[in-house]
Length: 152
Image (cartoon, rainbow, N blue to C red; front, top):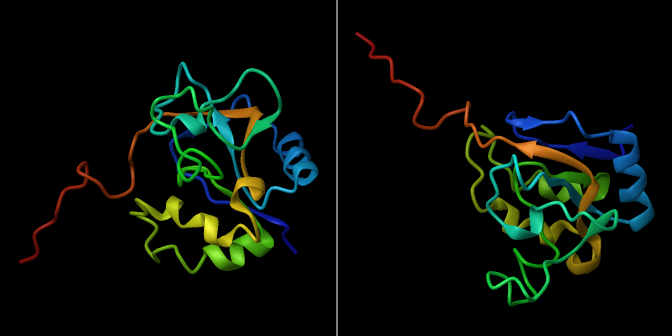
């Protein structure tokens, strides 16, 4: 029986990632939904909260000093991006209902994950900094690179 589900995009590099250490932090902090921090130098970054912090093992929000995150809600606090979420079993039982069956396009779904956090999203969702990944930002499923095949 599973305790956690990793639902990750195909364009993540995991050379610096250790799943055992990651899950130890997730368990000790009681995170229902989490993601690894993104390497700030090599990753395509869409939201400041996902950037790996050099101090500490995890974080739950971006500082108010960041001009893009002057509020307490998503994507500034209690939020993870849809490209590398990790769900507890109970959070997954909720989140899987949000995901489209083709898994090709999920833009905006990460704003809904908080409903599945099993309580206060500002406490139960976080980014694990000490175990980080690189997000290359290269789409290989769907997108503009696909060509249509004409049928006769």
